[in-house]
Image 1 (cartoon, rainbow, N blue to C red):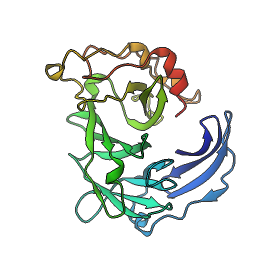
Image 2: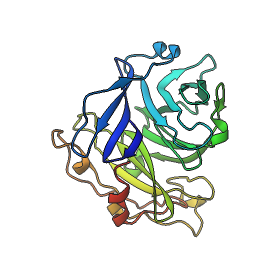
Image 3: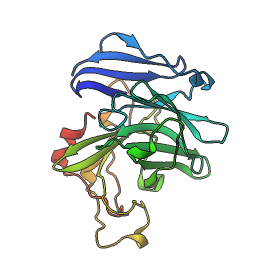
Image 4: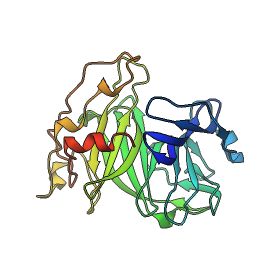
Length: 268
């Protein structure tokens, strides 16, 4: 989902769907979504997507050279070179794009950054290692028709840090900082959880989670209050009791947002 206009509590948004692949425009308010009022024509290349690996990430650009462009990424569809497929829909410059696939990570979401850049959220699951997540930062200059996006790996974490099936990312500004919010999906499973975590975007080198040897004196330990589990899930879902995140391993140059800031940034 990506906001078209208005605020996170009222106006219109694009919502993408799998299986019957589509992007629809919905009005919404703080209580509910209304009926769809329009559909976005999809590029021809989306016909190659499998039923359960559709347009997992969509972002409408509100600033920068691609203002007005809807950027869409398929979860795992690759081009002829094995890179992850995406499209620029509408706006001043439409066309296809690709993201360099790194170590088998799929795309699960994306978010706009101030200045016209992007954050791309990735996930990998293997039975012999569990689940991993990765956040990549894309400069505005990298996003153009026909481009292969290299990006910068901003953060990578394993389930040793108590992550789960991370599938959502958002961005907001709070207290002069760029705040990243990520969320997992429990897939209606009693074996998974819905977790919400927030971080302040670092201005220095990329983050390496779970590697204290690389940390400098700038390392801090995020407060457990920032991350809670399934109390954020809809009440219709069966979920586990809330879990405090075991932040015994610091995340280099990442700083936790105060608990007062969580509510202001949650609806991204």
